[in-house]
Length: 329
Image 1 (cartoon, one colour):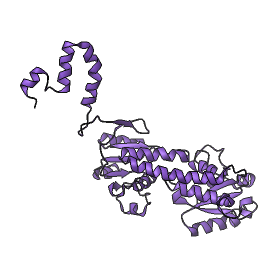
Image 2 (cartoon, rainbow, N blue to C red; image 1 turned 30 degrees about the horizontal axis):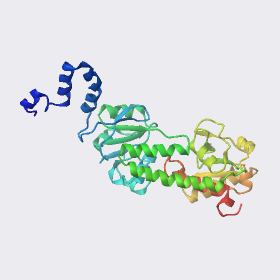
Image 3 (cartoon, helix red, strand yellow; image 1 turned 90 degrees about the vertical axis):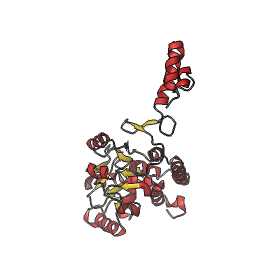
């Protein structure tokens, strides 16, 4: 409560009251200082101005003053990044696909990527929900309507988009230092691969296959196309604009890749896929198959736009250019 005597003199009044008196005495001064009044009115409980940022849908989002205690993740790569930032204890809900790190498997499930359960999310009482643009917009709208703080992020088309994604998650969780350290380490690993490859001239033609899904492969819209290029290869499906496309055996025979990477969940699945390519798919004459240049890639790591993409980059580069990493060509 403002002391009345001081208020009458104008010395103990609130900033808004003082500006009002100044307006009566000096309109020009009032006009100049009015924007400051807006900052004071928008002050957070901590005493500083509330900072508003925008998510990747362009929606305004009030930046929390401190690290949220209860976070719901609506995508596996977001879950992985949250744990990498040391926020595992703060995560209270994840999708049924969030299986990395292993600790995430024991957390309450909110549903899938396209069918998250809003009622379950609400029951978890989150003070931050991190979604991605693959989640249904109607779900995001419902969360907003329930006054649940939902921050939506996009997934980039190239490896370099990973770093601003980590930075954004670090910002909205107030783990800026941890995010900067994670970025620095990942960038150092990327630079090590690029330095090893140098100005490599021969770039093998690469085909990536998703095991047990026929001849589905990553197209030009997939971030894996960029990873292949940075590993010193060329994706034979890069001219197809979609993220995932279905190839025919005839087209693979025509494009004739030098190397095939199989996205598999296990070594056993990889062996089955290699046998299938060698015998049942009638691709014996393809250069990669005839030369047994068929390689395993962990599907879990490669299918998440997260920190483990640097593992995929390194493995691809080593297989495509072993001579640059101390191996035999």
